Length: 228
Image (cartoon, rainbow, N blue to C red; front, side, top):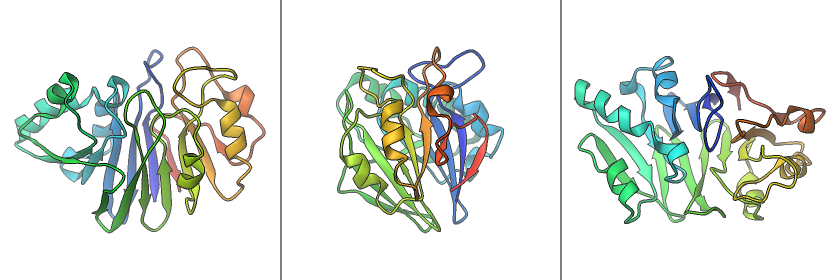
């Protein structure tokens, strides 16, 4: 299983960077997790969109979804459909974002399990300002992705059996918003069997100094690929 970081910033990227988006390759399948601003061009530098088996959205905030809008133009041009899995609601943004003829949309919640190219995918509701579903993909290896969340004990449930945790845990000490911070990353790193990949960086804060020295915390580079 391989994970490529298309973008790691939120709620907006620093200059030259991108918001949340990740390409997972496992058992021959290509699965995209979230498509924030700036991620589409990076995805297309790696794969043909026709090769993408599914796009899974953790939640519907702009910094995790906005590049689905230009993706629609591409799909119309090539007359191709893409499977999208998301927790849908009655909001205007959901209707604008996901109501399109080239999106094959499936609603997800905690009771949903998927088989995507031989990979088992399950979901866990986390603690964010909107409904956010963590995503767990099990193929040859297991990757768990928190999406956006404040600290909750459910993170440890998510980590169970995972080889790597892609976690919203890169905000500074004392951060009071709906995200985890570097102290949470350090706590998770006590489980030496799980790689912690710290994502959702703020454009004005670099967590490197606060997280250096922890062997199983990865501070990812955008467009870098990591073996899970």
